[in-house]
Length: 194
Image 1: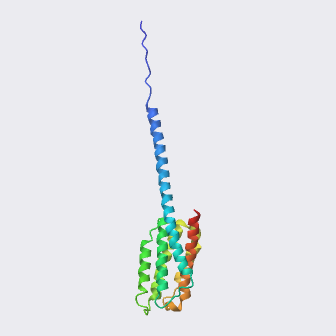
Image 2: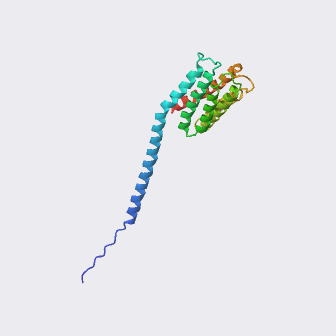
Image 3: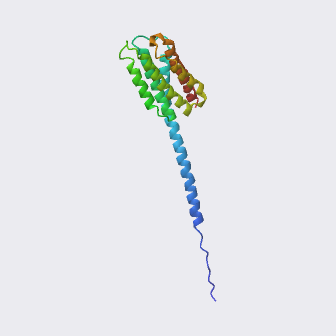
């Protein structure tokens, strides 16, 4: 009698599952590292801009050549430069400081309208509060070791007395700007180490 050979069917499903598994692992690896690399590249590109805006602010407020005067130009410019540095730092940490920054800028613009107005200290203190809040939130998101420095900025802003003319409390206004400068320098140093 003739012999009938029976061949077993090869099972393909284990190979199909293995192929899908390998494809999934490669896809996860590719997307994870691609996203991570794009984040690092964007941070490095922004790093120079952040450093420049911090240096612009710290150089301005740390120089003794710019005196606070009746026109409040120094204070106005210091607030704008600080707002710019905060905006750039916020983009690094993912914190949206847009509202705080805009309100601080609005307050800064008010102090240059009428040099004889008695509300300059009010507007400077409000700007300091908005900027302090933004700095504190940036500190919490990306610079956890700088809590004391962020608290010093807030406290210095709170020390500005709304019942005293700004030119009679130059030291308090400068203390706010100086404490913000110290905090920004430390944030910049930490960022440059990464």
